Length: 467
Image (cartoon, rainbow, N blue to C red; front, side, top):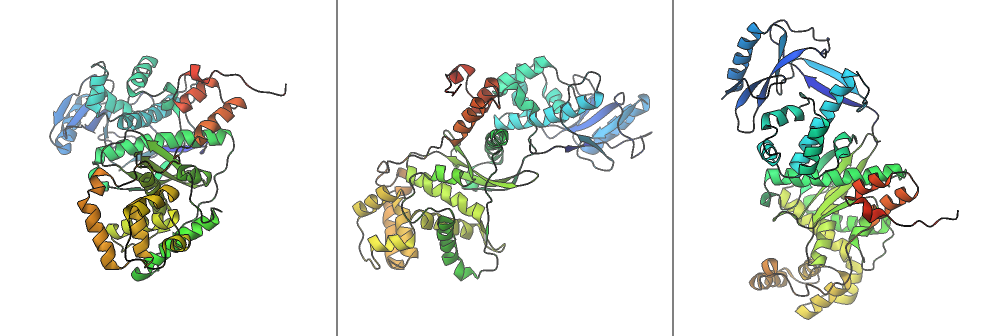
């Protein structure tokens, strides 16, 4: 779809009478594998065996044990996880279910294993956890071998694991040629590594489906340019990011009026957005580029929150991460502040802000902030940050406001005007594209069901036609 050929890498470290470096592995070559387990130990596993031959504390001990086994099994070779001394490259054009095509079966195992690992992480399972969910029918060692492409699967396993991981069977055959690049998280320290990987994989799976349906319709994503700020002096970066926000509004023909729907606006301009309704606590959002052979496509995932103006600000904060290239010497905390400034300037540009708020203020009321929030869809705290950055209020006044907002527990209990913004932040673009592809008979109703993640019955509807 996005790639015609994927190069797979099988890594073999051979002991004893190893095949020449250029020789490819034959289908009848048997192996002992030294693999790293979830519990930190190293296991020696005979190809096709249900259990490990032995378990060791270190990799060196496991290799020594495997070498001893090779002396009595001359027809076997040793495969060590993660080693790259001898690399065999086997080009693959995807799964070809041809009878007797051993090469195609091998390629399928590798593809299936990679997709199994992604689905497992996406659903938050460890190898042992997935083995338990499969009711012990498959051990965690067997699952690890399948993920590494070292063991074959059958239709029974496919059906079982699809149900447990809540994905369609065709998920394991999908070969999109996509990869995440430059992933940025908000509230990074509040979400653990495993949780971040889970969120990333769930986001990635959605973006795969999104780009897949666009490919059926031959939709080309608009070019997405970045603003290079690496040569800017630190003291000039604040004004530069605000100008970048105004320039982006101009480039996208948005004018200087309130933006009714940030989500739809972003998707209209090529930024794919995934909304998590029940995201993990501490997760606000992530942004990244999804790479194909020919393009870098901006994407973001956001945690839904009831105070929609804050969600809008978070979305544009992630847009700043995508749009701006900061100096490498800049600390992460400073980058976050500048991205927040970009978001505020995007939602509420300085020119109209000063026109209705005034050039200089020494007093501001909370009802006034709520009224602005209602019209522009921007949090009260961000309005005051705009006033400070624009020089409308003094440093002392802004510090006083921040102290007061902290005393009123705006950050933990919510700020005033939680429900005053009546706009929506939903986008139906992805759903519409799937229905369009279905109506144009570019995909089957079963495929549409898989893309939307809904039962086929929900897609049964009448069509309008000139015929």
